Length: 382
Image (tube, rainbow, N blue to C red):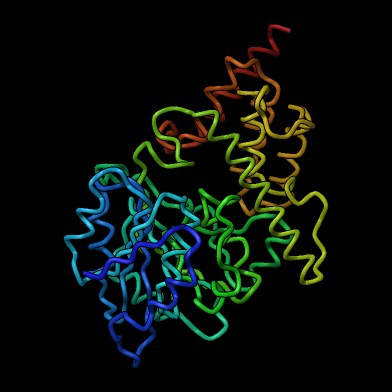
């Protein structure tokens, strides 16, 4: 097994190693699956096996270990020549993406988080819809827990996956329907124009950098069915499973603000107009923002925010820019009002209900009934 052990920043040296890699078939598009791993040894085999067992045969599997301290490297060594290992010092997800891409050769590149896995037909279905001018193909992921129990889908099925000239939606709303890392197949030609990912700014959640910039370079094609699994296990950066972590809300708000700045910079470069209130058109962002403000005002990252102001901005974003059905728009509007104006002891359960999927009943009706009864009681007592 050939082991490539780069130091952070030695990407040019990695590219020179292309000549030493085995020959691959040229009669079909080569697809690279780059597994990025850091201390996920309990899930790593399943991720690698899912990449190796694709029904589409013209693939290469690259496994980047970002300085793991568990037994991940022993697992990687066991695959011998079936994979291309890249063993590096810890530098974060952005550096893992950069190092994996540097040794890859595929015309299509899938970055697979080591705690996720792909279904057998993923590569085949991505290649089937690939055309010249496509910047990326995206697909839903089935959400599972650590024991593989199905929990739903990512993104949720009530939110469409956007297709076509998605950059127009980005400039209008600040966000488009897109999955997390493992739900995307990227054009190599496009990645070559935007990589390396800035390793300091996007040490974590480097997929946000890719998903934000890629649409400016071509078409986005969406496959509505789930082609992989997104695992919630308690250590995910954004996922909340065992209770609300306030620090994650703060980081999520900051990450969104970074992406809005990327949009502004790229739009300026291409001479596109960006609305000044871009961040205030994204109701998903505003959910986390008002929750962060109410639960941890001392460390909230936007000093100018007020509860009443975010209620107004959130409701406006829901009705002007979201694609949700009216019932969910109404529910979310009530949620913003509740979170913004109610006492803190009544706010936390509402935030948990919205941001922790497991705490949410299948029906929305109970929530409407709760709001109706609460406001009726308050009216009678006033």
